[in-house]
Structure formats: structure tokens, C-alpha cells
Image 1 (tube, rainbow, N blue to C red):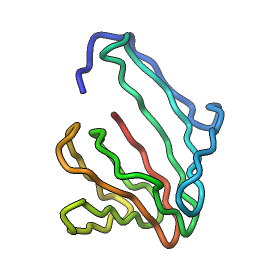
Image 2 (cartoon, rainbow, N blue to C red):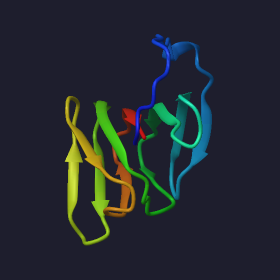
Image 3 (cartoon, helix red, strand yellow):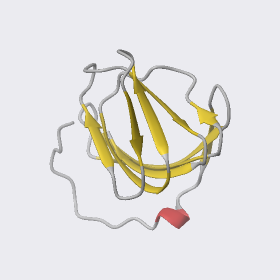
Length: 113
């Protein structure tokens, strides 16, 4: 992620339209903003996972992810698993370690990638 120059701004996440993204099980609801110019555009999201959500893919995109509510389990392709609870974060680079998210309880996350 490269943060090229872009103007200061604020975001009221309640005003950003939700989009639905089906998982293998459960749903993800994204509120998404983009900042900067392509190809170095930064995507910032507020994401809600429903209880029982399991991502339908192994992600290779880099993220900085902060857990606001609920619990998020992230499995790495090598078998390691990490549980995030409110106030915890993870960070991973592009193409560094494929990861897959799931939650039994539901989760609300703030993600920059």
C-alpha cells in the first residue's frame, strides 16, 4: 500500500451505501471508500460479517485490519489460526501469506488495503 498525496477528508460511514458479498456461508456487508489515484488507490472499508460467515476464497491481498466488534478467526494456508477480538488488529502484505476469514459470532471490522 502506497499512500500517495490526497486531500484531507472525513467519512461518515453511516452514509456510505452497503454492498453485499456472499461467503461460502454467511454474508459480508461492505461500506467502501477509495482514496487517491489509480494505480496506487487505497481502499478503506467498514465490513460486517454475519454469524457463521466463512470467506469463499483464500485471499492474497495485503490488509491492515482492525476488529471493532465480535470475533474474527483468520486461518493461514500453512494451518496457523488467529482469533481477533475487539481492539486487536492484523497486518499482512500482498502475496505474503494467503488467509481466509470466518466468524462464529459475527464481526465488524475496519480494513485498509
